[in-house]
Length: 425
Image (cartoon, rainbow, N blue to C red):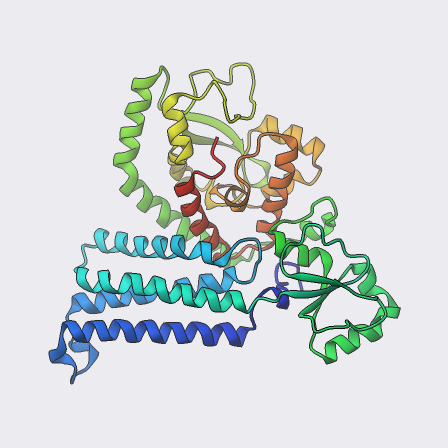
Protein backbone atom coordinates (compact mmCIF):
# COMPACT_ATOMS: atom_id res chain seq x y z
CA UNK A 1 0.00 0.00 0.00
CA UNK A 2 1.45 3.35 -1.00
CA UNK A 3 1.05 6.49 1.08
CA UNK A 4 -1.18 8.05 -1.58
CA UNK A 5 -3.58 5.12 -1.27
CA UNK A 6 -3.65 5.23 2.53
CA UNK A 7 -6.78 6.73 4.03
CA UNK A 8 -7.19 6.13 7.78
CA UNK A 9 -10.44 4.33 8.45
CA UNK A 10 -10.95 6.40 11.56
CA UNK A 11 -11.05 9.65 9.62
CA UNK A 12 -13.92 8.81 7.33
CA UNK A 13 -17.26 7.04 7.64
CA UNK A 14 -17.46 3.42 6.60
CA UNK A 15 -17.90 3.05 2.86
CA UNK A 16 -21.26 1.33 3.21
CA UNK A 17 -22.49 4.03 5.58
CA UNK A 18 -21.72 6.96 3.31
CA UNK A 19 -23.01 5.10 0.26
CA UNK A 20 -26.33 4.48 2.02
CA UNK A 21 -26.50 8.08 3.21
CA UNK A 22 -25.68 9.46 -0.25
CA UNK A 23 -28.17 7.15 -1.99
CA UNK A 24 -30.86 8.16 0.49
CA UNK A 25 -30.27 11.85 -0.21
CA UNK A 26 -30.14 11.26 -3.98
CA UNK A 27 -33.46 9.40 -3.89
CA UNK A 28 -35.01 12.08 -1.68
CA UNK A 29 -33.84 14.87 -3.98
CA UNK A 30 -35.00 12.93 -7.03
CA UNK A 31 -38.41 12.47 -5.44
CA UNK A 32 -38.59 16.21 -4.63
CA UNK A 33 -37.77 17.14 -8.24
CA UNK A 34 -40.30 14.62 -9.56
CA UNK A 35 -42.98 16.06 -7.27
CA UNK A 36 -42.18 19.57 -8.50
CA UNK A 37 -42.37 18.46 -12.13
CA UNK A 38 -45.73 16.76 -11.74
CA UNK A 39 -47.16 19.68 -9.76
CA UNK A 40 -46.17 21.94 -12.65
CA UNK A 41 -47.61 19.51 -15.23
CA UNK A 42 -50.25 17.33 -13.50
CA UNK A 43 -51.62 16.14 -16.84
CA UNK A 44 -48.63 13.82 -17.34
CA UNK A 45 -48.88 12.07 -13.95
CA UNK A 46 -50.40 8.99 -15.56
CA UNK A 47 -47.78 8.78 -18.30
CA UNK A 48 -43.98 8.29 -18.35
CA UNK A 49 -41.46 10.93 -17.18
CA UNK A 50 -40.43 11.31 -20.84
CA UNK A 51 -43.78 13.00 -21.44
CA UNK A 52 -42.61 15.98 -19.40
CA UNK A 53 -41.47 19.06 -21.38
CA UNK A 54 -37.83 19.03 -22.45
CA UNK A 55 -37.20 22.14 -20.36
CA UNK A 56 -38.14 20.18 -17.21
CA UNK A 57 -36.13 17.12 -18.27
CA UNK A 58 -33.03 19.20 -18.99
CA UNK A 59 -33.30 21.24 -15.79
CA UNK A 60 -33.87 18.13 -13.69
CA UNK A 61 -31.03 16.26 -15.40
CA UNK A 62 -28.49 19.04 -14.82
CA UNK A 63 -29.51 19.59 -11.21
CA UNK A 64 -29.44 15.84 -10.61
CA UNK A 65 -25.95 15.53 -12.10
CA UNK A 66 -24.73 18.46 -9.99
CA UNK A 67 -26.21 16.83 -6.91
CA UNK A 68 -24.52 13.48 -7.60
CA UNK A 69 -21.15 15.19 -8.13
CA UNK A 70 -21.69 17.16 -4.92
CA UNK A 71 -22.35 13.94 -2.98
CA UNK A 72 -19.14 12.41 -4.35
CA UNK A 73 -17.16 15.52 -3.45
CA UNK A 74 -18.58 15.53 0.09
CA UNK A 75 -17.57 11.89 0.46
CA UNK A 76 -14.03 12.91 -0.56
CA UNK A 77 -14.07 15.81 1.89
CA UNK A 78 -15.13 13.50 4.71
CA UNK A 79 -11.87 11.55 4.26
CA UNK A 80 -9.85 14.43 5.68
CA UNK A 81 -10.10 16.48 8.84
CA UNK A 82 -8.28 19.59 7.66
CA UNK A 83 -11.51 21.57 7.27
CA UNK A 84 -15.08 21.85 8.49
CA UNK A 85 -17.26 19.83 6.15
CA UNK A 86 -20.33 22.07 6.45
CA UNK A 87 -18.34 25.16 5.42
CA UNK A 88 -17.63 23.66 1.99
CA UNK A 89 -21.21 22.80 0.97
CA UNK A 90 -22.35 26.23 -0.27
CA UNK A 91 -19.28 26.93 -2.47
CA UNK A 92 -19.46 23.33 -3.73
CA UNK A 93 -23.12 23.62 -4.79
CA UNK A 94 -22.63 27.13 -6.16
CA UNK A 95 -19.63 26.14 -8.26
CA UNK A 96 -21.23 23.05 -9.80
CA UNK A 97 -24.56 24.69 -10.58
CA UNK A 98 -22.76 27.76 -11.96
CA UNK A 99 -20.81 25.44 -14.28
CA UNK A 100 -24.11 23.88 -15.37
CA UNK A 101 -25.48 27.39 -16.04
CA UNK A 102 -22.44 28.16 -18.21
CA UNK A 103 -23.10 25.00 -20.25
CA UNK A 104 -26.72 26.04 -20.70
CA UNK A 105 -25.72 29.52 -21.90
CA UNK A 106 -22.91 28.36 -24.19
CA UNK A 107 -25.09 25.79 -25.95
CA UNK A 108 -28.24 27.95 -25.69
CA UNK A 109 -30.28 25.19 -24.10
CA UNK A 110 -33.86 25.82 -22.98
CA UNK A 111 -34.60 25.37 -19.29
CA UNK A 112 -37.35 25.93 -16.72
CA UNK A 113 -36.56 28.85 -14.41
CA UNK A 114 -39.47 27.99 -12.08
CA UNK A 115 -38.29 24.37 -11.72
CA UNK A 116 -34.76 25.52 -10.94
CA UNK A 117 -35.87 28.21 -8.46
CA UNK A 118 -37.80 25.58 -6.49
CA UNK A 119 -35.26 22.74 -6.59
CA UNK A 120 -31.95 24.61 -6.33
CA UNK A 121 -32.46 25.48 -2.63
CA UNK A 122 -33.86 21.97 -2.01
CA UNK A 123 -30.59 20.51 -3.31
CA UNK A 124 -28.66 22.70 -0.89
CA UNK A 125 -30.83 21.52 2.01
CA UNK A 126 -30.33 17.84 1.15
CA UNK A 127 -26.56 18.41 0.86
CA UNK A 128 -26.49 19.93 4.34
CA UNK A 129 -28.35 16.87 5.63
CA UNK A 130 -25.80 14.60 3.96
CA UNK A 131 -22.97 16.69 5.39
CA UNK A 132 -24.41 16.27 8.88
CA UNK A 133 -24.59 12.51 8.38
CA UNK A 134 -21.00 12.29 7.16
CA UNK A 135 -19.70 14.57 9.93
CA UNK A 136 -21.47 12.50 12.56
CA UNK A 137 -19.77 9.39 11.19
CA UNK A 138 -16.25 10.68 11.78
CA UNK A 139 -14.34 8.94 14.54
CA UNK A 140 -13.76 10.96 17.69
CA UNK A 141 -11.80 8.79 20.15
CA UNK A 142 -8.24 7.62 19.51
CA UNK A 143 -5.83 5.70 21.73
CA UNK A 144 -2.25 6.89 21.37
CA UNK A 145 0.95 5.02 22.11
CA UNK A 146 3.54 6.69 24.38
CA UNK A 147 5.79 7.82 21.50
CA UNK A 148 3.04 9.74 19.64
CA UNK A 149 3.00 13.55 19.71
CA UNK A 150 -0.60 14.84 19.61
CA UNK A 151 0.22 18.56 19.84
CA UNK A 152 -0.88 19.27 16.23
CA UNK A 153 -3.78 16.82 16.21
CA UNK A 154 -7.06 18.62 16.86
CA UNK A 155 -9.46 16.01 15.47
CA UNK A 156 -11.22 13.94 18.14
CA UNK A 157 -10.24 12.96 21.67
CA UNK A 158 -6.99 11.23 22.53
CA UNK A 159 -6.41 8.88 25.44
CA UNK A 160 -2.99 7.56 26.47
CA UNK A 161 -2.36 3.86 26.02
CA UNK A 162 0.00 1.47 27.74
CA UNK A 163 2.05 0.06 24.89
CA UNK A 164 1.70 -3.56 26.02
CA UNK A 165 -2.02 -3.71 26.77
CA UNK A 166 -5.31 -3.02 25.00
CA UNK A 167 -7.08 0.34 25.39
CA UNK A 168 -9.09 0.61 28.61
CA UNK A 169 -12.13 2.06 26.81
CA UNK A 170 -13.80 1.86 23.39
CA UNK A 171 -11.78 3.65 20.69
CA UNK A 172 -12.07 4.12 16.94
CA UNK A 173 -8.37 3.60 16.23
CA UNK A 174 -4.94 3.32 17.80
CA UNK A 175 -2.14 5.68 16.71
CA UNK A 176 1.45 4.49 17.00
CA UNK A 177 4.89 5.43 15.69
CA UNK A 178 6.56 3.23 13.09
CA UNK A 179 9.08 2.05 15.68
CA UNK A 180 6.29 1.04 18.05
CA UNK A 181 4.44 -0.82 15.29
CA UNK A 182 7.65 -2.67 14.37
CA UNK A 183 8.36 -3.61 18.00
CA UNK A 184 7.91 -7.41 18.41
CA UNK A 185 6.54 -6.87 21.93
CA UNK A 186 3.63 -4.93 20.39
CA UNK A 187 2.66 -7.77 18.00
CA UNK A 188 0.21 -9.50 20.41
CA UNK A 189 -1.57 -6.17 20.99
CA UNK A 190 -1.86 -5.53 17.23
CA UNK A 191 -3.31 -9.01 16.82
CA UNK A 192 -5.97 -8.37 19.45
CA UNK A 193 -6.77 -4.99 17.92
CA UNK A 194 -7.19 -6.63 14.51
CA UNK A 195 -9.52 -9.25 15.98
CA UNK A 196 -11.62 -6.45 17.46
CA UNK A 197 -11.51 -4.57 14.12
CA UNK A 198 -9.69 -1.56 15.59
CA UNK A 199 -7.18 -0.14 13.06
CA UNK A 200 -3.62 0.77 14.02
CA UNK A 201 -2.62 3.99 12.22
CA UNK A 202 1.00 5.11 11.69
CA UNK A 203 1.50 8.50 13.35
CA UNK A 204 2.88 10.39 10.37
CA UNK A 205 0.20 9.23 7.94
CA UNK A 206 -2.51 9.98 10.49
CA UNK A 207 -1.04 13.44 11.06
CA UNK A 208 -1.04 14.10 7.31
CA UNK A 209 -4.75 13.33 7.04
CA UNK A 210 -5.58 15.50 10.07
CA UNK A 211 -3.54 18.55 9.03
CA UNK A 212 -3.52 18.22 5.23
CA UNK A 213 0.27 18.59 5.32
CA UNK A 214 3.36 16.40 4.93
CA UNK A 215 6.09 16.82 7.52
CA UNK A 216 8.96 17.11 5.06
CA UNK A 217 11.43 17.41 7.94
CA UNK A 218 10.69 13.79 8.85
CA UNK A 219 9.57 12.23 5.56
CA UNK A 220 11.93 9.89 3.74
CA UNK A 221 13.10 11.46 0.47
CA UNK A 222 13.17 7.96 -1.10
CA UNK A 223 9.38 7.76 -0.67
CA UNK A 224 8.92 11.04 -2.54
CA UNK A 225 11.19 9.96 -5.40
CA UNK A 226 8.86 7.00 -6.07
CA UNK A 227 5.78 9.21 -6.44
CA UNK A 228 4.42 8.91 -9.97
CA UNK A 229 1.06 10.41 -11.03
CA UNK A 230 -1.21 7.92 -12.78
CA UNK A 231 -1.00 8.35 -16.56
CA UNK A 232 -4.80 8.19 -16.92
CA UNK A 233 -5.18 10.92 -14.31
CA UNK A 234 -2.67 13.17 -16.09
CA UNK A 235 -4.42 12.72 -19.45
CA UNK A 236 -7.85 13.52 -17.98
CA UNK A 237 -6.43 16.49 -16.07
CA UNK A 238 -4.78 17.88 -19.21
CA UNK A 239 -8.02 17.60 -21.18
CA UNK A 240 -9.98 19.29 -18.38
CA UNK A 241 -7.32 22.04 -18.21
CA UNK A 242 -7.72 22.76 -21.93
CA UNK A 243 -11.52 22.79 -21.63
CA UNK A 244 -11.63 25.04 -18.55
CA UNK A 245 -8.99 27.44 -19.88
CA UNK A 246 -10.75 27.74 -23.25
CA UNK A 247 -14.16 28.37 -21.69
CA UNK A 248 -12.61 30.74 -19.15
CA UNK A 249 -10.90 32.84 -21.82
CA UNK A 250 -14.11 33.10 -23.86
CA UNK A 251 -16.31 34.08 -20.91
CA UNK A 252 -13.79 36.30 -19.10
CA UNK A 253 -12.31 38.08 -22.13
CA UNK A 254 -14.57 41.18 -21.70
CA UNK A 255 -13.51 41.49 -18.05
CA UNK A 256 -9.85 40.99 -18.97
CA UNK A 257 -10.09 43.71 -21.62
CA UNK A 258 -11.59 46.18 -19.12
CA UNK A 259 -8.93 45.37 -16.52
CA UNK A 260 -6.15 45.80 -19.10
CA UNK A 261 -7.46 49.24 -20.08
CA UNK A 262 -7.80 50.33 -16.43
CA UNK A 263 -4.21 49.25 -15.69
CA UNK A 264 -2.87 51.29 -18.61
CA UNK A 265 -4.88 54.35 -17.52
CA UNK A 266 -3.76 54.14 -13.90
CA UNK A 267 0.01 53.85 -14.33
CA UNK A 268 2.75 53.64 -16.92
CA UNK A 269 3.79 50.29 -18.28
CA UNK A 270 2.24 47.28 -20.02
CA UNK A 271 -1.03 45.82 -18.77
CA UNK A 272 0.32 42.27 -18.84
CA UNK A 273 3.44 41.49 -16.85
CA UNK A 274 5.68 38.68 -18.15
CA UNK A 275 7.90 36.91 -15.64
CA UNK A 276 10.06 33.80 -15.79
CA UNK A 277 9.01 31.12 -13.31
CA UNK A 278 10.17 27.57 -12.57
CA UNK A 279 7.74 24.87 -13.68
CA UNK A 280 7.52 21.10 -14.06
CA UNK A 281 10.88 19.36 -14.05
CA UNK A 282 12.62 22.54 -12.88
CA UNK A 283 12.29 24.10 -16.35
CA UNK A 284 11.69 27.83 -16.63
CA UNK A 285 8.77 29.28 -18.58
CA UNK A 286 7.22 32.69 -19.25
CA UNK A 287 4.25 33.30 -16.93
CA UNK A 288 1.67 36.02 -17.67
CA UNK A 289 -0.07 38.20 -15.08
CA UNK A 290 -1.92 41.48 -15.07
CA UNK A 291 0.50 44.08 -13.76
CA UNK A 292 -0.49 44.96 -10.19
CA UNK A 293 2.68 46.88 -9.27
CA UNK A 294 4.37 50.00 -10.54
CA UNK A 295 6.60 49.60 -13.60
CA UNK A 296 10.11 48.26 -12.83
CA UNK A 297 8.98 47.15 -9.37
CA UNK A 298 11.70 44.48 -9.37
CA UNK A 299 14.48 46.57 -10.91
CA UNK A 300 16.52 46.02 -7.73
CA UNK A 301 15.90 42.29 -7.66
CA UNK A 302 13.04 39.91 -6.91
CA UNK A 303 11.47 39.94 -3.47
CA UNK A 304 8.25 38.73 -1.87
CA UNK A 305 5.25 41.07 -1.79
CA UNK A 306 4.21 42.15 1.70
CA UNK A 307 0.81 43.15 3.09
CA UNK A 308 1.63 46.89 2.87
CA UNK A 309 3.93 46.76 -0.16
CA UNK A 310 4.33 50.28 -1.59
CA UNK A 311 5.03 48.84 -5.05
CA UNK A 312 1.39 47.67 -5.42
CA UNK A 313 -0.91 50.14 -7.18
CA UNK A 314 -4.42 51.02 -5.99
CA UNK A 315 -6.04 48.96 -8.73
CA UNK A 316 -3.44 46.28 -8.14
CA UNK A 317 -4.64 45.76 -4.58
CA UNK A 318 -8.16 45.14 -5.84
CA UNK A 319 -7.26 42.70 -8.60
CA UNK A 320 -4.82 40.83 -6.33
CA UNK A 321 -7.48 40.45 -3.64
CA UNK A 322 -9.96 39.07 -6.18
CA UNK A 323 -7.23 37.01 -7.92
CA UNK A 324 -8.05 38.78 -11.22
CA UNK A 325 -4.33 39.39 -11.79
CA UNK A 326 -3.92 35.64 -12.38
CA UNK A 327 -6.40 35.44 -15.30
CA UNK A 328 -3.78 35.79 -18.09
CA UNK A 329 -2.33 32.50 -16.85
CA UNK A 330 -5.20 30.77 -18.63
CA UNK A 331 -2.94 31.23 -21.68
CA UNK A 332 -0.19 29.36 -19.81
CA UNK A 333 -2.64 26.56 -19.11
CA UNK A 334 -3.55 26.27 -22.79
CA UNK A 335 0.13 26.19 -23.77
CA UNK A 336 0.82 23.38 -21.29
CA UNK A 337 3.34 25.21 -19.10
CA UNK A 338 0.79 25.39 -16.26
CA UNK A 339 -2.27 23.57 -15.00
CA UNK A 340 -5.43 24.96 -13.44
CA UNK A 341 -4.45 23.29 -10.14
CA UNK A 342 -0.98 22.60 -8.78
CA UNK A 343 1.81 24.16 -6.68
CA UNK A 344 2.27 27.86 -7.43
CA UNK A 345 5.41 28.53 -9.54
CA UNK A 346 8.15 30.71 -8.10
CA UNK A 347 10.96 32.76 -9.60
CA UNK A 348 14.33 31.10 -10.16
CA UNK A 349 16.04 33.33 -7.59
CA UNK A 350 13.54 32.32 -4.90
CA UNK A 351 13.76 28.64 -5.85
CA UNK A 352 17.54 28.57 -5.60
CA UNK A 353 17.57 30.33 -2.22
CA UNK A 354 14.76 28.25 -0.77
CA UNK A 355 16.32 24.99 -1.97
CA UNK A 356 19.39 25.82 0.14
CA UNK A 357 17.29 26.29 3.29
CA UNK A 358 14.69 23.58 2.50
CA UNK A 359 16.39 20.58 0.80
CA UNK A 360 13.14 18.94 -0.35
CA UNK A 361 11.80 22.15 -1.93
CA UNK A 362 12.49 21.04 -5.56
CA UNK A 363 9.98 18.18 -5.15
CA UNK A 364 7.29 20.79 -5.89
CA UNK A 365 8.39 20.60 -9.51
CA UNK A 366 7.30 16.96 -9.88
CA UNK A 367 4.01 18.19 -11.40
CA UNK A 368 2.88 21.18 -13.47
CA UNK A 369 2.46 24.39 -11.45
CA UNK A 370 -1.07 25.71 -11.11
CA UNK A 371 -3.09 28.90 -11.05
CA UNK A 372 -4.44 27.73 -7.70
CA UNK A 373 -3.37 24.94 -5.38
CA UNK A 374 -3.76 23.17 -2.06
CA UNK A 375 -1.31 25.50 -0.31
CA UNK A 376 -3.13 28.60 -1.60
CA UNK A 377 -6.55 27.56 -0.29
CA UNK A 378 -5.20 26.20 3.02
CA UNK A 379 -2.45 28.70 3.90
CA UNK A 380 -2.56 31.71 1.60
CA UNK A 381 0.44 33.83 0.57
CA UNK A 382 3.96 32.90 1.72
CA UNK A 383 6.46 35.75 2.03
CA UNK A 384 9.44 34.28 3.90
CA UNK A 385 11.32 31.01 4.45
CA UNK A 386 9.22 30.05 7.47
CA UNK A 387 5.86 30.40 5.70
CA UNK A 388 7.31 28.82 2.54
CA UNK A 389 8.34 25.86 4.68
CA UNK A 390 4.69 25.40 5.65
CA UNK A 391 3.61 25.96 2.05
CA UNK A 392 5.89 23.12 0.91
CA UNK A 393 4.28 20.77 3.41
CA UNK A 394 0.89 21.46 1.76
CA UNK A 395 2.32 21.11 -1.76
CA UNK A 396 3.86 17.72 -0.93
CA UNK A 397 0.55 16.56 0.54
CA UNK A 398 -1.12 17.47 -2.76
CA UNK A 399 1.50 15.62 -4.80
CA UNK A 400 1.16 12.52 -2.59
CA UNK A 401 -2.64 12.55 -2.90
CA UNK A 402 -3.09 13.49 -6.57
CA UNK A 403 -6.59 12.66 -7.79
CA UNK A 404 -9.42 14.24 -9.73
CA UNK A 405 -11.47 14.45 -6.54
CA UNK A 406 -8.61 16.26 -4.77
CA UNK A 407 -8.51 18.73 -7.67
CA UNK A 408 -12.27 19.17 -7.42
CA UNK A 409 -12.02 19.92 -3.70
CA UNK A 410 -9.34 22.56 -4.38
CA UNK A 411 -11.48 24.09 -7.12
CA UNK A 412 -14.44 24.46 -4.75
CA UNK A 413 -12.26 25.87 -1.98
CA UNK A 414 -10.77 28.34 -4.48
CA UNK A 415 -14.25 29.74 -5.11
CA UNK A 416 -14.59 30.31 -1.37
CA UNK A 417 -11.09 31.83 -1.22
CA UNK A 418 -11.91 34.32 -3.99
CA UNK A 419 -15.14 35.34 -2.22
CA UNK A 420 -13.42 35.87 1.13
CA UNK A 421 -10.12 37.26 -0.22
CA UNK A 422 -8.21 34.80 1.99
CA UNK A 423 -4.41 35.00 1.74
CA UNK A 424 -4.25 37.82 -0.81
CA UNK A 425 -1.30 40.24 -0.90
